[in-house]
Length: 153
Image 1 (cartoon, one colour):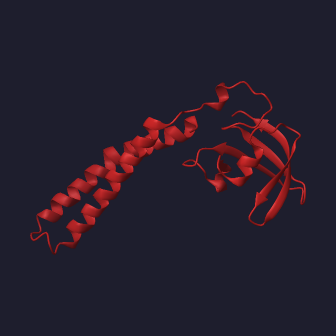
Image 2 (tube, helix red, strand yellow; image 1 turned 90 degrees about the vertical axis):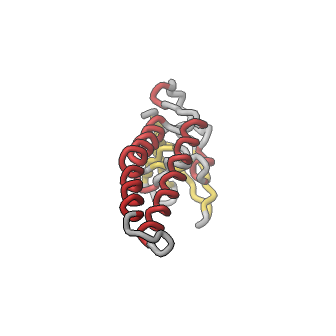
Image 3 (cartoon, helix red, strand yellow; image 1 turned 180 degrees about the vertical axis):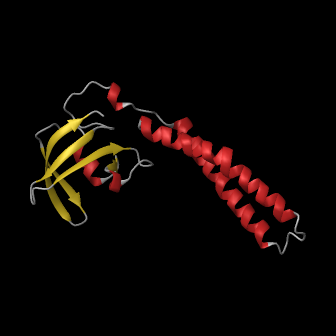
């Protein structure tokens, strides 16, 4: 996981623990005051929210405790595509440029230019050098790219 991805998960965890969880606890307490819990829709909805929140907290804590955080800015640039690098690609078919950062699966956001290390493009790029031509086996067919730049940012 990248340093930025880990920080984003820590922020979400803090938000869940300090704001969302107390709000849900208050909603459960308020719903209990309305009487019979068997037929209380507000109570059941709040309990469902609590279950989701606690599950997400455990999921994030598990990911953070078992991950290796990589700060690509601290790695000496070698001109090779590795986890965390930002790669500028030129599509050799239509001359369109694309810029992607290779990140962990939890951080992937194609709209933001972050692709999962497990994606077809990232798998094709890993270990390649600037100037190399790469063929990506995409669902729409093979796409040829040239690696124009590799950055550690």
